[in-house]
Each structure stands twice: as structure tokens, then as C-alpha cells.
Image (cartoon, rainbow, N blue to C red; front, side, top):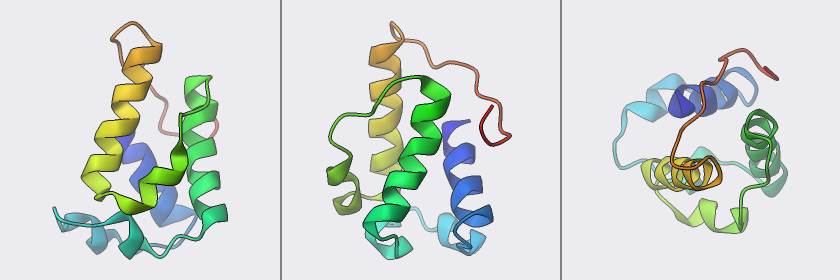
Length: 92
């Protein structure tokens, strides 16, 4: 679900080509996101989770899959090992 939220955000808000996400080796840096884009993307997740992700400046150096895993880990740590049910609609 988290992956869908991030992909949908990048495709629908930032105009990224959906085909980019079929590459299992996709690097976050290859998405061409500037620092403001990264902050906005992370705000989307943080708004849904109710807490701020630690040290988001490291994400541009990661593979997309690695970033997703890291974000999921932080969410689980904040929620006693659980991943909350997310609404796919923005801001829900």
C-alpha cells in the first residue's frame, strides 16, 4: 500500500512516467526530484502517518525499493510493528 501511495503521488503530482517504476534497480536520484519535491513527497506520507520521518536527506542516495523499505520500517517502529491501513486518496 505504501508503495502505491508513493508511486501514485509521483505519477499524478510530479508527472513521473509510470514505466520508471518497473525497473527493480530504480534509484531515487533517477526520478529527478529536487529537494522540495522530496519534502513534498515525504509530507504526503507523514500526513498519513502522523509523525515525521527521521533524516529524510538520505533518501536521494538510495534505491527506490530501499527507500520504500526504510520508510515502512520507520512507520512500523512508530506503530508497534504495525503498518496502518492507508487510504489511497491524497490527504486521507
